[in-house]
Length: 435
Image (cartoon, rainbow, N blue to C red; front, top):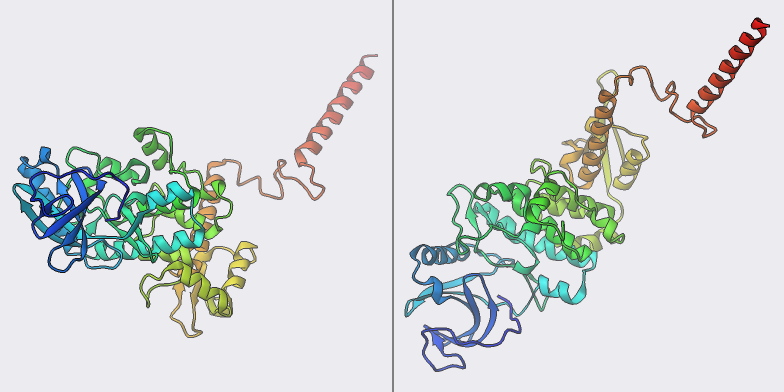
């Protein structure tokens, strides 16, 4: 836990050897935070003088056996996770009837406080932090643990720039039901950062809910604004389901197109559209595969890639006779070919770094996934629009009177003028025949 500027207060039931007394094997130094179930103190081990954070349950909850059990469960969950980007739980104890947790002490501050001071972060710095949190979350997910409350306030940044995810109070085991560890009676999660399906059914939240929250956290880091701000939870849920998110790049034009897309994909209202793993989310942000190296801090990746010569890729497709054709080019050249519509429908192509393969679908490769998904989505929307137009079969781009010609003047104007001339001629002919 990170230190804050809260005033010191004396916890109940303690001895008196330190500034605030002691609990078990720890001397209490000062209060550093206030949590939903109690207070958090900076402590010092009597045996080795190491600093720790001590989470002490409030007196009002100590007589509730269910809450006490859940407090203990929080320790059991956090203690089994050993990772440099997760705050470590060290000990659980009971001192004169007051349960307490001993946690790793983080000398730093939360991202929430950093945002209050800075407003928003530089893109590379923000992605570097989020990539570290994704690394820690990935570790929890491998143990079938879902955090359910990822947000800036629950991410601590050390003085040397290491990000650590904390607060396991809402963690659930994926296949063992809802632990709801320390916050009984409260909403499971923070509305602005919660996936829409978590609103409906927090007990069945999965990895994609955490990925949504991770994307929402990055949204805030880069824009300085809450996603779906200034609206009530029900309205927020409706907007999330309908994907009415203000794109982060509209708020902060300095955000790259790739990062803007990666955030919007992670925050899609349909969980099937989101990245399936934290690893995939980091790949979306960096455009680099992490398969052989783990989740790499994105700032390092971006810097290293800028110094490297362009990588050559091989693009395979089937010609009209069903014969496989293989061409090669840099990732930049291939991407430009699709954006400029020299190549169409990415689903027809496979890519590989080797001429002999194996070749993979473009959306399976980090370097081209954003392109493949976006172009496929645009093509699908175009086809839906065509299917919904009963006259589309007869009005193509060449024949529709509503399509402009080379002069830039819509064809319907010519039809209107011609129709007016024809009508005038008929009227004139009628008058002449009457005389």
